[in-house]
Length: 156
Image (cartoon, rainbow, N blue to C red; front, side, top):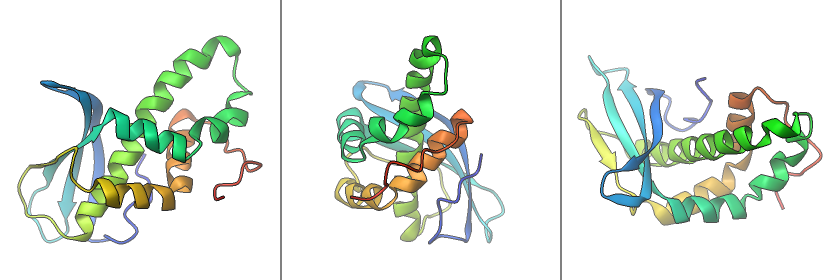
């Protein structure tokens, strides 16, 4: 799936590559890797986007992710819930990493493989993620092949 996440950075083509994976030597940090290509570049680059697990937990709570996904999950066999919960955790991390990558892209990138460290853009990401709850939910539900629940409002 290639979500509509780069609304302010149309000159880039972004493809999710892998993750979330643990960062070596940092058990509290996960990373997702994206392939990024700018139209004017001959070749793309890989950008590793790191997130602290505690920041992901805080964002999950702020977004009320469990509440927002609950009704969509009721259609599933209860025995499948643990499997879906694990996948939701991964898809949530991917969506938030994508938001963080979008923040970096707004300032532009040089054409070389790079990392966005876990402690970069944390304040900006808190604000951005709050503004993109609908995107995060749509990403997760699309990856799970589930229908969104419109009865839970996406803003307070």
